[in-house]
Length: 325
Image (cartoon, rainbow, N blue to C red; front, side):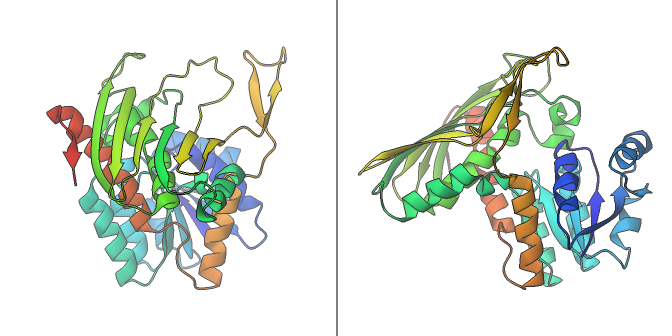
């Protein structure tokens, strides 16, 4: 199966290329990136053929699946272009910057008979998979509350340009935990109350967010979604959850499978992960879904739900009142 990498503005592009290269049934045809300096450097580093035009690579008849790793604002137009060219699509999260664009992406893929997967690799972390099994087995009883964190370092660049990203830390770091909660409890969002601000960095978007969520099955949750990690921190951040049920509780630390590296060759300590590669497992699952013609493992609707939670948080901050669906 031939894959094209569409854009390398997002830092996750490197991880996806590395993961795809490990799959024996995937060949990466090339990278398309109009920013020549950025694109050529990425292509050279990853031994990929460079294309300066998104559309040229999308229209390449050899390509059957594209992985879109551009700034968020470009997700919609490129997904629709890929769908019209009959290419299956993996798109970086968030699915889009507006619900309307996300819905257009889903519809375009449906109309053209191609699969759409939103890149939400945290679903493939072993600890997360095990937590879902425990919940579905009823060992925790009814889920009463979930409190989560998604802290990280401030990425800079287009991430702090609202026109390109759709927001700051909230739209960037709400997505993973909101998706996991939805995946665990299978309930729709009801209300979101949120506070956000810029406290750690001199940037034009928020770097801090705190959400309080209620779901239509009675579960409530909180989420600390902030770019509060200093540059010297051993890793980019975390994804943690405390899940409280009527029969028990569960603590989840998604990236606990690591060792610590202390070396004079580095300017800070580092986390070295030894657990399963979530990006590899995600791309492998999508490729197999295409080959076996089964539904997308993480469909567009999942990405749309997570985006809606983030946008409701912004609405709540603007109004100073809970946003209701």
